[in-house]
Structures are given as C-alpha cells and as structure tokens.
Image (cartoon, rainbow, N blue to C red; front, top):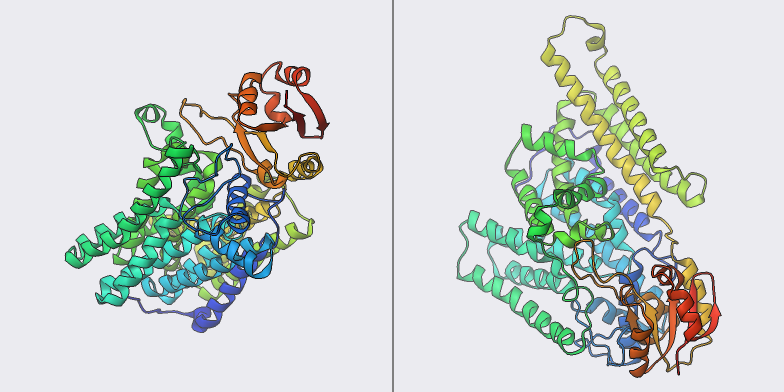
Length: 567
C-alpha cells in the first residue's frame, strides 16, 4: 500500500495537472450520451426502462422507498424484487423538486460517475507511485465499460461508486485501524451490496486481507455483521414481493448459478474470459499485465491480483449470466483491478526503456488520437467496421513501436553481433509497446461504437403512434423475450420498454407462451389490449394469422401490432 518514489518523472513532474486533464477527459467521455431521455436511443433498454418506470411510479404513486413498483405488474400492485431502489427513488425526489423530466435520472448517474472517477484516482494514488497512478487513472477514465455504465440509467453506476469507495475505505481501515474508517467501510460496502448484490465478492477480498494482516478480530467480525445484516434484511424483504406477486428484476426468476451441465460445456465458461479480454483488457493489454505478474511480482501487485481473482470467482459462480453477451456490463467490476495491474506493468516498461521523453510524446499522441477517433465518430465522418478498426490499430501501434525503438537505440538494428537474449529483450519490449499503444486505441474505437445507440428507435416511435389508441387506465399485454435459455433454465423475459413508452400497466407474455389461450387467460384478469412485436409474433408459425382472425386489429406499425382483445 505504500507509494514508491519515481526515479524519472519526465511529464509526470506536473502530475497534478496531469490528473486534472485525465479527470476532464474522463468527464467529457462520460457526458457524451448523458443528456438523452429514456427513448429508443438507449443502451440497455430493458434495464433502463425498468429503472425509469420504478422512478416514475415513485413519483406518481407512492414515494415509499421500500416498495418499488414496476409496470409489467399484471393486475397486482407492482411491488417487485430488486436491489435497494436508491437511484430511482432519488430520481423521483428530483421529479418532485423540479418537475418530471427523464434527464434528471441520467444526469444523476453521470454526476455519480464523476465522483467514482475521483475516488478511483484517490485509490490509485494510495496504492501506487505517481507514475503508475496516472496510468491506472487513464485506463479507468477511458475504459469503455466504465463509460457505458456512467451515463446509463441503471444501478451499476451507483454500485461502482460505493464498490471502489469501500475498497479505499477498507485499505485505510487496515492501515489505521480506527473507528472512522471502520464506519466508512461499513457504509460504503453495505451500499455497494444494496445497490447491486453482484458486489458481494468484495467481502471475500476483505476477508482474505484481514486474514493476511492478522486482523480478523471482534472489531472486524462486527464490521462484517454491520455490512451484511441490512443487506440480508433488504433482500429478504424484496424476495417477499416475488413470493407474493411473482415480480422480480432477474434475481429469483432467472437461473444464474453454475451447474454440472455448464462444466460439460467449457466453451460457455470460456466466454467469461473472452468478454473480459475484449471489453476490459482491450484485448492486448493482458500481455502488459502478464509481463508484470511473471517478471516483476511485488507487494503492490498482491491486492489488485487478489481483487481480480475474487471477481472471477463471482463470474464463475454466476456463469449462466456472466457468460451471456447481453451481460457484458456485468464485467464492469473487473475494470478497477485490471487498471491497477495494467498500470504497474506499464510503469515497469516505462522504467526499462530508454528515451522516456520520446515514449511520453508517442503515448500522449496515442491518447489524443483516441480522442480524435471519438470526435470523428461524433461528427459522423469516420465509422470503420470492426475488422478495419483492428487492422488500423495493430498497424499503427506496430509502426509507432518500431519508430520508437529505432529512434531510441539505432545501433541495435545495425549490428549483426548481438546475443540472442538481447534480441529477445528488445522484441519483448517492442511487443509490449504495441500492446500499450493498441490498448488505448482499441478503447477509442470501442467507445466510438458505443456512442449514440439507436437500435430501438423504431419501437419507441411506433409506441408513441399506438399510445393514443389505448385508454389511460387500460391494462395491456406486451410481448416479452424468451423464458428459457439454451440450457433449458429460466431467464427473465419481462420486457418493460413497451409498458414504459406507452405509459401503461399490464401483463408480459414470453415468446414460448404466445397463444390465444394465454391471451384469453390474461383477458379474464383485466387485459384489454395486446401490443405485439412483429418479430416475436413471427417466431411462432401461424400465430400472426390466428391473432388477426381472433382479435380486432386496431392499428399496425412497422414493428408493432395493436389488438383489442375484449370479447
């Protein structure tokens, strides 16, 4: 935990200015999509619309934070099992204070993301040298996954703030062993787990560190109890909503945990590593981490490597979810530990190579080009395919690395009498330079491809068209997703976006359940209209024709049917 001194600061001499510039760049990246309402231009449509609906229902129905309500409630009150709804509740408070505007919710997430960046920079300064802290802060500020949850109206952004803050507070508690840091650790860790139960693996990290430092005493046990009791009380209370009403935002109504069937499908488990490789390490950055871990293991590496191991323990335990492509944002918890590991490798590489000023110039140029990639994408003047992007990044990084090494030590490449191990050393350094330069370039391309998501604009537009045909108090049925995954286990199929955009309550029907009989069953419980996605209807042979023969088709848009189902 002790900071090391910098032998050669170069541009790091003005480190305060560098940290300010990193924060400003990270703030800009997070702000790009932070000013959009919850419409078709959204990234995580299912999660965002659920959160926005809970916030709206707090605002219009009841502000009791212990009773969150969703829209796909059937004929019930809508109480739903979910994480502690602090984010939607605070959004509803802003609605009450300043008027209903969806931008308040996303603006709140954005503000919290800036605090998260500041807390991570503080954590880096506490754990690393100035140089390594700058590298880790850059990695975190430019991480596409962190940016993705920094302007999306979902609980991961709030969880990440408390998650990183809890590590910072806990390490200070280990160091100073006073009640101030004890209390701050208890509050931040408890709030991380309440914000999203996925953060529970951080408790394992804390336990191992307590054992390592021989501080597993009454005070520490009391800390664990203080953290876990409120968390358990909330999730037991929230589970009662699922037990009584059958409503859950994916915890009890979905199979998450690893099983023997997945052990027989190693490719499914390998997807966990693939997602981390592509979306966290970017992907050649992992070689910088391996270089540090294998060649220069030290005490500074222990905490981030242990942290990452605890994260992967969680990924494997919840493999049915963490291996899914839709759950890429679940891997956001890898980023802090990876940023620390990567930065230590980059710091060591920086120490080993000569011509540090030249390296600093090239590295700064890479960061500026990363920003330019994003600017070009924003202006619509540059949007390459992924294959072209990979080619551009690898060729550019290779050329820059070769130019750097040639300019640093030209005699090496004109000599025919070097030992083989000298060639290996310089080839290794060259490859690591390619990995470093390509990591940040890949971040630029990944961020640029995430900008302005619009894959659901058609559904949003069509929802507004159909909204006028449905009375305000009418219950509807809306198409959902699959209720079973490829292994036959349950998944959450309730699609909230049509309910939210239509501003209606009602029933969600899974793709496997689609039938006239099921619709009639829901009609008996009060449903009057069926808003059907054409894509879902087409999945069942003959169902579209059967619907048109049985029910009155009120209107049809590019993506939706609206049927009146009253007898």
